Length: 90
Image (cartoon, rainbow, N blue to C red; front, side, top):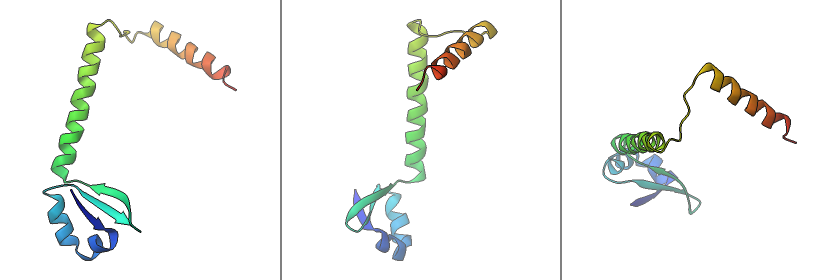
């Protein structure tokens, strides 16, 4: 993983963008890391991985019986529970 100062990234923007296409780049300011930049392809892959993991957790919850059907009755009960929690919060 490469590291560039914010100033260098600004001055050498073309090089910076080209580098990000191959590997993440850590941006530093005053000798401390302030950001990390990744390519759009890597961001899309990470986002899709996150979505896939969320779907898998949901499927696991369904298989384990950790779900509740969203009926008007259940929604009303959940809303009442939420309101009760709010009224008990200092």
